[in-house]
Amino acid sequence: MKLHRYDAIVVGAGGAGLMAALHLAWAGVPTAVISKLYPTRSHTGTAQGGIGAALGNMEEDHWEWHAFDTIKGSDYLADQDAVEIMCREAIDCVYLLEHLGLPFDRTPDGKIMQRRFGGHTNNITGEPVRRACHAADRTGHMILQTLYQQCIRYGVHFFNEFFVTDLLLTGDPSDPQTRCVGVVALEIQTGVLHIFHAKAVLLATGGFGRIFKVTSNAHTLTGDGCAIAFRRGVPLEDMEFYQFHPTGIYKMGILLSEAARGEGAYLRNGLGERFMERYAPKLMELAPRDLISRAIYLEIREGRGVDGKDYVHLDLRHLPKEVLDEKLPDITEFVRVYLGLNPETDPIPIQPTAHYAMGGIPTNVDGQVVLDENNTPLWGLYAAGECACVSVHGANRLGTNSLVDILVFGRRAGLHMAEFCKAADYAPLPPNPEQATVAMIERFMKNNQGTERISAIRRELQQVMMDKASVLRTGEELKICLDKVRDLKERYLKARIDDRSQAFNLDLIEAFELGYLLDCAEALVASALNRTESRGAHYREDYPQRDDANWLKHTLVYRVADTDWKFTGELQFRYKPVTITKYQPAERKY
Image (tube, rainbow, N blue to C red; front, side, top):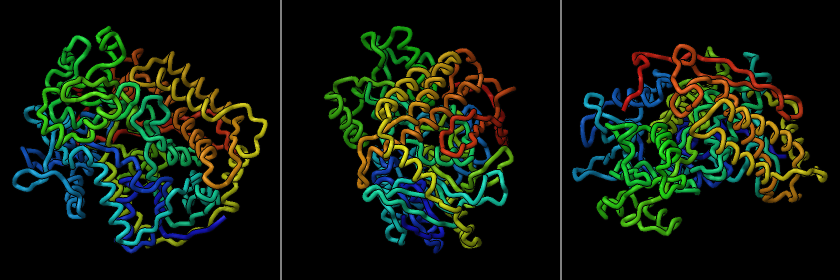
């Protein structure tokens, strides 16, 4: 075991983690970033379409319009104070990235170019507005490269291919004196455990889309940060709200960005109809994602899928070749490589794909992890990005706001951490900080009699989540799903792995990741079963109406860890009020 000490530890090297690390470095705080990947392979790099910011470069726009669109898109579950901060500061973050060297596309007069995206409107006319700042359809890739280069420039230390397994606290989170003092990580190359002692820790580990069979998420998005916090007594917020992106490649889930629809692509059913006219006659293909995903499922259910199958078409055939080549090069390449189709002449088979977690670790607007409905902070612990829930996305995230979220709240978390680290001393590590991780490793490495296989459990989890807890839900199916997930958790405790080596033991890593996925899946399904209404991405066919009287509130789900990390106890629910500043809840119409 090796011990390291840094004032600030950032877990995750995507956009949120790198933005925080950069601001910590600028503040002179000794900072280390721990990543289970090489940083430029982080999932931020797959974000295609753009960053939403009301620059008004191509037509009239205002940050207040952006805020209203975000709140309306969230089905009025977003905290409006946080949304207003995000939409104001988005403008500053885009200009910061520009000054750091990000190569945005340009208008003829040299301004940052912007495109339309779903749910972003002129609040006066209701028409779509150009708000997404982009670098072709590789915007996330450019953000990741830019921030990583700047972190290297300013001396951030990186521990690449280190897998975080535990969060170190000085006591129980319910004790107001408890602090987060570090993390435990497994060095993948050697199998050696490392203890990272810190004044403050930021979790920026991304989402958990791999609980579903068809997903746009990379294999590494397994809910690591959410699960290790959950196991240590931190609640998870609004886990029932999981977004399915309308346009994933059929059966593969590979994302075809909303940028395509922003540039004018159509959605067509098996009859060749632009069917969104039935569901959102004003915005059509630029309606919010939850609405379009439900529309696709309903079209298929009513027999209007293509050739009677469970997909519809994305149609780019009417777009000029220069638009496809210059503004959508990655999308068109994906279609050619993975489907063998030519987007200039062939319609593209698509289906909704599991894409983004609106819920996660609850935080305040400075990235501090909070423990209850009173926003009591857990000192020294921060979260940002998809693993966090501020909440600016509420029940449904608008396209481009994921990049806005990671930049704005990654920066705010980094700034607050810097001030905290300068004022705080190192608190002592708990005794035997590696104990829980060692016990988990030994469970898998020494379980020669285990009858269960990690791969089989993961496959069954992904299938049942896709079948019972995706776009359209019912209480009956959610109960079946929850029972199945809990059965899989019991089977997980009997699982074995074959690889007994230390170096690059990816069987062991996958075993840990499956445990994280099971925890996130259980929290999601239990929360979905608990919320007896339909709101945003959470659509209950047995409760099809939004119910503000009973459910205009955030869900907090808790678990108390037992001594050997089985986590088989019942979940407990508490609730937190939605912050409303000036936008009163109203019916969503597009």
